Length: 550
Image (cartoon, rainbow, N blue to C red):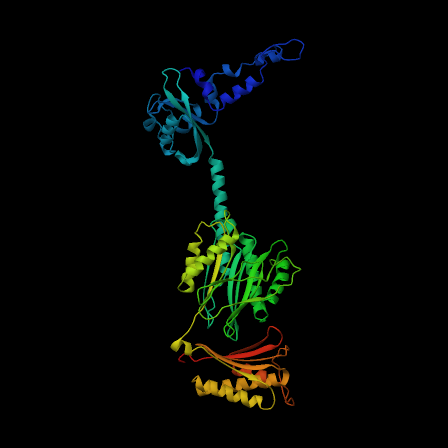
């Protein structure tokens, strides 16, 4: 068979021929400095003759290249030629035999259907990194050719061994999978293993890692019971990916829990976090929302550091979106954060989330938030059910390109017998010598009406008396005594207009005062104090109810 006649149809040959024609001078014009058209040997001054490319024997060329080459023709893809590299790889192949019988390696590489496609379309096809016999990987190109002798059409198969590249790529993918698994494991270990469940709220959270190593590591959430019936809710997103982002997230979450124990207003917590984030890593920033729910006031006080707005569905089904104030992300410095508030009354549901839930490359961020609002408006059921429905509505799957954190909070509306377990009572105190007796009588009457056992009744009256006495002695008007019961505890709180926080100290035998807080700390399950918005303070204590309390 004359391979020279179809050599012009080899891949790249026509491009090289065109390039030669562009540089060939058609007419020899003396005196203009042009080179007369001639073959390569003319340029050597006759010292050494170099054969033209068109005169090279094709078979010798194909037999010398390291890639595997095979030529098949006809509808049965009968063998016309295989080069030496092909024979070395797969053995001698008899000419004239159909490929499906004599070339089983092509079937293992999945090339037989490709040969049919190339014949039908007369267009070349390429497949990359196909695994063949012996575990070797090949990138194969199948190119249509016209057979010179019988006018039949054939296919030239060119297979390059890319085993080393394939193995290197697999090692890289394995390394990425290992890094992703490490990041996911670290991330999940740093998130709450079990959410705290406050008395008045029902809470669920979901974390969905992204589908790649680059999409794991920055999101976190937390629920922190502050005492006195109040709950802190946190969600944040470190602007990074992988193990480093997860490590920064863990440090920020730990810091939030520590600062929350100080019972500071939300904007002061973010102010402290801002400075800490810059110390952890000056090149990494984070967004965060810190909110505090007070069931007695029925509202959510929050501060935001560049994070997405909280969404609340109220008891009537209307969707509320948190507005200003919003400050820059943590770690930027130079900003004074401020707090805002939104209602979260009984019957309401709030959602805190990270950008992976609403941000899409092909849509505006506001469109994603609006879609989330629509999904929240129609989502009912338990907090966990709502979490799952919001993820589904946003199209979040295991292959999502960003990690997602969602925190759903419900403040249930309680009626009937369940409502009897959640009660409030308050008394305004105007000072004077009659304030303490009035407070004791009020506390005694309320605790009696709530049918507490005698021992808990007496302890509650004593605690209320000591807290009121402390406020009368060290505080300023206005003063208020507030009692609250839940299904788990009794909470007693006294507020006044002075912002000096009490502390527990050891009273000397000769001291006439200083024992009230120590008494409260001894008899109560927990106690604490905090500054209130607008000035003043609140001092509280709580008692855990017996398990069989109705």
